[in-house]
Image: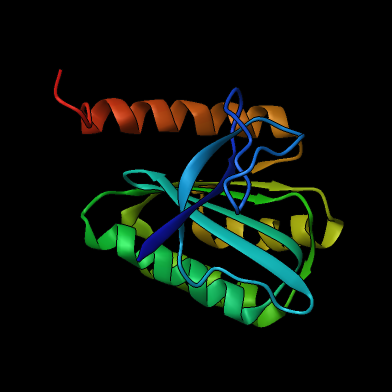
Length: 173
């Protein structure tokens, strides 16, 4: 379940750290973090669902099989709601991955392809770009790879706005 606030990269919002403090750096919006996102010796994972149907992940370091399992579990929770998943993977600081992690994520996405609207992935590492290219061949037009943060954040901001408008106001006028 969702249990605390953490930070999600998106343009124009305040920086909210894992302890609720303000952090220097890029603008971010406070969003619920999914319990169980975590850190291994080689990498960290943050998972958020900032709006209905929007899955945001951040991986730093090396993506592990355990990270893939947690991303899949979060995606499955969104899929259970009947909403199409719009994923935004900030893997800019992800340097590499366990091959089993890429394979597990690709197999999962193929299995629920009809429930995924699109997946945006921000990557810089050559190894990560190669893995995304391989997955893109299998998933045909589902993955949008980004090399620069600006277009990635613009796509995320547009998806958040659309999701929030579609879900209606959370507080009655």
